[in-house]
Length: 194
Image 1 (cartoon, one colour):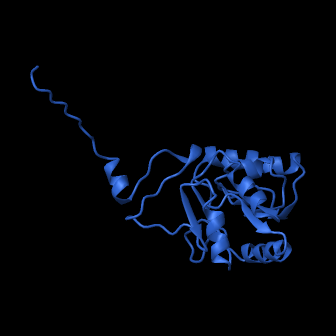
Image 2 (cartoon, one colour; image 1 turned 90 degrees about the vertical axis):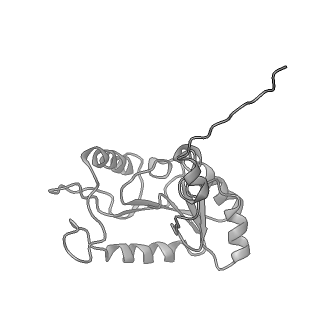
């Protein structure tokens, strides 16, 4: 799940409006029907965390482009919420919600957006999207995350190592190096008699 989305200022408004339009078309439900894209939060503890984070939308004076509240329901349902250009210091930007809330943030310079993207305790994955592949790769090389994609997000393969940086994990899984992490190494020291 993408935690925050940086959009260049030249396309920000149009992108935001089209994203809101698309997300409004998604169906929320229990998942027992076809074409349900958004199900409930997994458990009561995580639902409580989502409610607490949603409270910060009001207390921090943030502007939802979509959603922004959690209505009463028979389950742990959280409607998709998109926050319009919140401050970088806001909780919805700094915390991992594990709920369908996405802050959209404007950027204008590469150094600014790289600095903001790296200013987090997390670092599992990141992606850069651009028609300019050279620029995208240059930016991707500066991101502090265990998995970085260019013009895609969350492509995975069991033959490629997968793991996070910072508080998103130590070590990797998958690939040869991931398999080695399940092995116990042994060192044997032999010395000739003096």
